[in-house]
Length: 120
Image 1 (cartoon, one colour):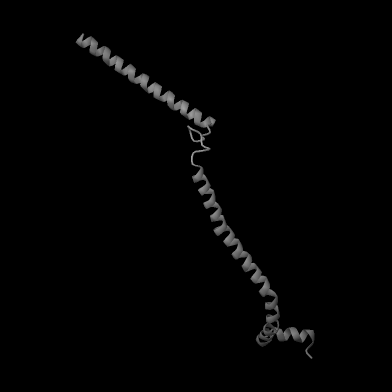
Image 2: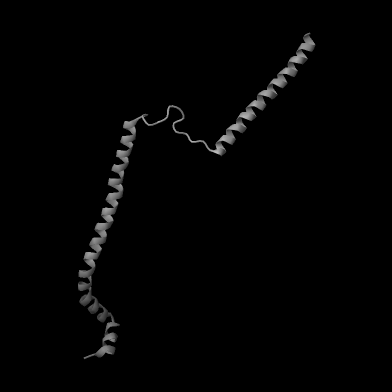
């Protein structure tokens, strides 16, 4: 009756758009509904798996560590692994302390020399 050109012109009107929506929305939703449901189930499952199961696994791991106590730990240092930067820093700190002590001894020695010269 309308033909292709007339049909598109009719769809371009407000009433035509409502008619097309009413005609084709229900079949489209019957296709989209299972897809959206599956997506929602996937999202909920993923959330539960990461929060509940992941938290349970972490709790079990912490419980196992607590139960083991100090069985697998070294007697001294608690498994500390040294590196070159830390060793250099410690060596510099020790040198600074030694220099400070030497300077203090030198200062005390000169003070002692002055006191000995004064009080004889």
